[in-house]
Amino acid sequence: MPRKPDRPLRRGWTTGACATAATKAAWAALLSGAFPDPVEIRLPRGETPAFALAHTVAGEGWAQASVVKDAGDDPDVTHGVEIFSTVRRGANSTGVVFKAGAGVGMVTLAGLPIAPGEPAINPVPRQMMREAIEEVSREHKVAADVEVEISVPGGDELAKKTWNPRLGIVGGISILGTTGIVVPFSCAAWIHSIHRGIDVARAAGLTHVAGSTGNVSEDAVRRHFGLPDIALLDMGDFAGGLLKYLREHPLPRLTIAGGFGKLTKLAQGALDLHSSRSEVDRGFLAELARSGGDAALGDAILGANTAAEALSFANARGIPLAELIAERARSTAKATLDDAPVAIDVMVVDRDGKVLAETGHG
Figure 1 (tube, one colour):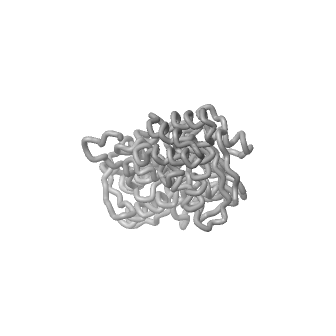
Figure 2 (cartoon, rainbow, N blue to C red):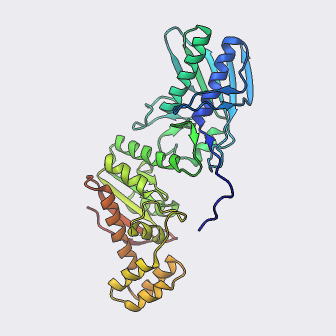
Figure 3 (cartoon, rainbow, N blue to C red):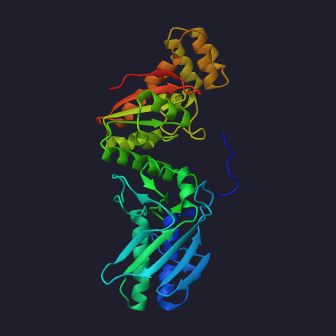
């Protein structure tokens, strides 16, 4: 088991919270001539953190501030990026208008919470920024008609490490967050991306999507079925996040593809396939082998060092252990989907991308 940390994991701030702090500081400076530093904002659950500003500059009719994102102890690809907000007075009665600066993506596909043609700034960050602008506007007795441009230097390169290209978000990262707070290793961002991937596939009218545990299985399922990129859902360890969302937002067909070890966990009934939260039960594999008619193989599997070694024992004796696992994994998935109208099949793939077993679908 992984060693527990010696101290509580430190929480961090979402890109949306950082963009809100930078926006509030810039708008205050445009109206008053001074940047509040640190600048305090209100998060959706009522917390009021203060953020130090990294950069401030102003000119005729505009002001700009930035905040460096601190993701705490979460392994977030945007940790340490500098998030800039440039504000300008808007035309009368236009309200708050959002613009994508360099490094912030634009939405091009339907199915996301933001419409195509809009900057990839999600609804909660937009609302946070509106509320911050309205607060400052009330203090200075002016209308909250503001153009807000969010930019993230290097965001176009960072976006390549995210789901954005597959979701049809081009040119940069998204400004995200529902609470303003990053909880370390909560995996919420990954599961959020799975959900948005399903939304985009549904909006595009796709009838077949695939959830894969990793790159090798994703490449295998792409070749096997000829699926487009937007049909490929990077499920990772989060089988539950995928299946439970599809239960409420069904598509006609789902393929789950993964390695023997990960899918053994799914076959056992685990919906979180991470090594720290579930493990392969050799007793379970041994019972499957015995059900295939080989008691001696079951005993050998109990002494196997790894799931891969257990599979090699079964292959040597002609017992279709990978096929048995695929069928059991499919049963777990079907049970999780409940009565949702989703036909499901499972593929077991080896480390070289070869398909070891494949179920029917229905």
